[in-house]
Length: 163
Image 1 (cartoon, rainbow, N blue to C red):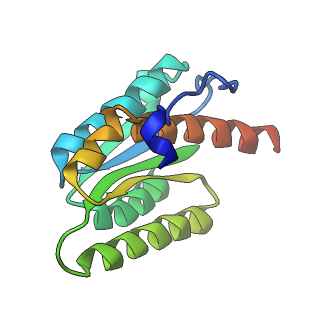
Image 2 (image 1 turned 90 degrees about the vertical axis):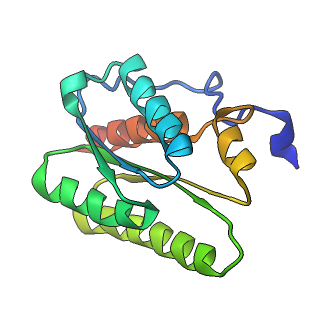
């Protein structure tokens, strides 16, 4: 597997615009908190690193990854935001629950973005086990939270440039 050999959160090959003019929402799932806390910290730190003002980052916690959908929808309904970052972690178990949740979350997050015509970023890990999740939450493969924040900045900047 190619990901065994690299940090997937390396953005040295691309330019990241300033996040200063934008307002962001971060919705983070409390379930699998050891992982989602690291995803959140990565996303928050990346937004700050690229110039977002602390007052322009609104963070909310929801119960689990499925609830990211409602959290993002509520944020976009109540706040003037340029992008929302959804952070969660679903780890494969012994039942088909994993498949249903992952599919519902991916589709739901996409639908919220379409409904509000705003970027809603999918920062949800869907892994086979805890080790893989930790590897993608600040471990050897980088931090999906960083990636989600960079994506939010880039697409907010793109949308702003098209006004």
